[in-house]
Image (cartoon, rainbow, N blue to C red; front, side, top):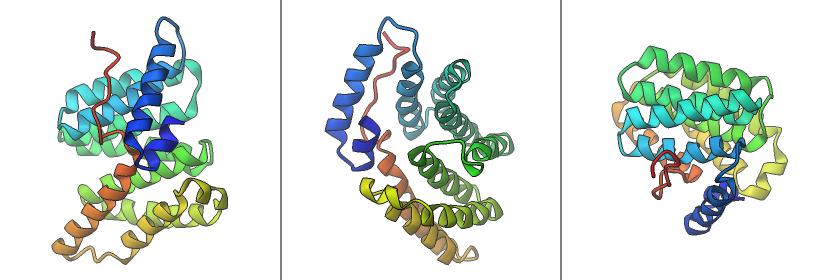
Length: 205
């Protein structure tokens, strides 16, 4: 519910659901603790605190691995990759993005998580000018969106497909157009919602 509301830009309601989830998860050993670390990692990335983002994402990945939750593990891996890229370790970060995309491309993940990781990875690849990767995943995203009519109910398929079309139409040789498209993509990707409002860090007391 919290993720769906974040996708709809209903940040206040989403934060309420996330706060409820945090309260219910307290004192228990459950996979939800990993999911609650994802918005923390996103918030730290938005603040340019890549070390803290990497710590939160690594914690989420460990929980995902321990509970065998593929959605959580893939989300966390891709956040680890983005944190490494923000630190300047671009090649290592891109390898983690590729690892997350394996789960995406073979259909191991839920539709919502698949779409979100597609958008985020394409945006990140564009930011570091990994244009061949960006084009490859854009074409894959376009094909995937065409196979997801149920996503229309969440208002997500149009966003994902629109992002793919913008990426495909973009001229990689123009820095001005690159910057404009990157800004547009980030506005779409921000509908993940995690970085729009401060998230509570479960590791902080």
